[in-house]
Image (tube, rainbow, N blue to C red; front, top):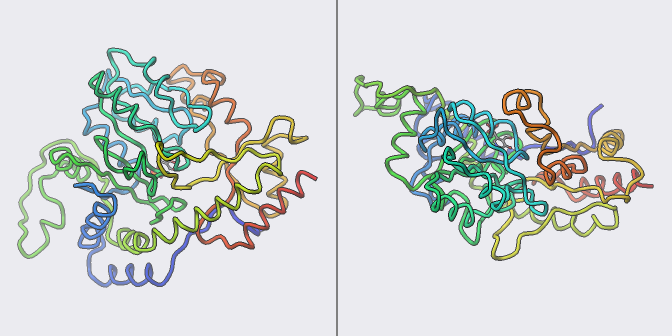
Length: 382
Ligand SMILES: Cc1ncc(COP(=O)(O)O)c(C=O)c1O
């Protein structure tokens, strides 16, 4: 059965098709001129000195942590309310993820809980801007300075977020973005690291391409050379030109897409209380602006005669797709074995996790689609 309103549908138009066709006809299938153009446009959009295009946010996180010098014996503080990739990339460096509970209001990692979790082995802080809400980077920066830690932010949800007036992508050692199919800027799969640090940027570029001294672009252009040196152990994490072509077109329509997300979030906000649902928090001016990647609601205690899991099924039966962000890290068997964590250990995260669901929210959604979601919610409650 196809859903009347799926959880997500991408917005791909003529501009994306033209860009991709141009890249296919250019002869550059791997990283070439479109990747260079996308990196330059993205760096300018965010205001960062460097943007390094990679194959995913997972790759971006792995590189940024390695670039920050994280390795075996180190601890990295992050949130249990995230996608597994955040924690996996810490493990891939050989370091140990240390989970820190979330602020019950924003569901972003709580800086006070993070301060309590710092040990002599702590090497880095890895907050995420949950759902697109601005994480309190100022507080994390203070902690990082006080304890000599690297601050890397997972901005998979947060292209379009600003923290205290500063666009996400600035003000930390490195910021990692995702262009996965459902993200605010979508290329299917893809990611970006931004940084203002020249040395780090040069190192990340090498790490992203086998540790080689020259990338394909430099080797195969008219003024290139076949010679290169492998200077360090690297990975195959580069973005390709057809992907960057999609990214260029998506970046041009980004502002309009964000405005649509904001408008849809505003309509949802108006309706939630009457439906027995808690609307997501809105940041105040000091905190920043929300990118509205996700619209995560919570069931009001006693407001529903059944729980979250059943609501998801009831909505599905009425043709509405929803999702859950996330099954917390400490509820998965692997991390229980690997990190010795248990459900119930992070009370704010646990309390939210059992009552939350994400409603459809994407620029391609029409007013009618949103009305169908709200009518289905009303029908479920009746
Ligand atoms: C918070 C967070 N971090 C990291 C990732 C990984 O992103 P990617 O799929 O681009 O590797 C995701 C993807 O959903 C995410 O939501």
